[in-house]
Length: 77
View 1 (cartoon, helix red, strand yellow):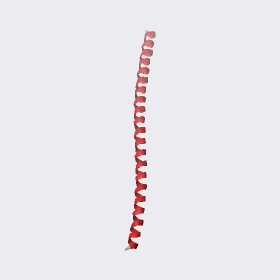
View 2 (cartoon, rainbow, N blue to C red):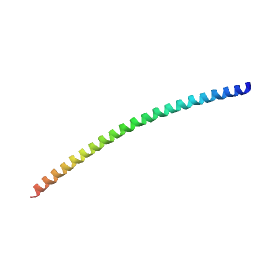
View 3 (cartoon, helix red, strand yellow):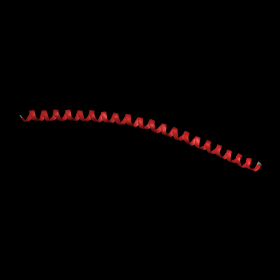
View 4 (cartoon, one colour):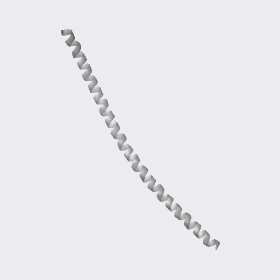
């Protein structure tokens, strides 16, 4: 009976240690997941900004193309 108590006590300590390790791993994984979520939000905002900038540049280029083609057609007439 006493030997069984010693074995169970050792097993209990081992399980408590495993719980502590797994808890630390879970907290680290949660921290990492939160960092990745914040990073993805930042990437999404930057992507939206770049899309808008791209559209603005395309609009400016299209406007310049129209002006150049319009002024070129005036010279030819």
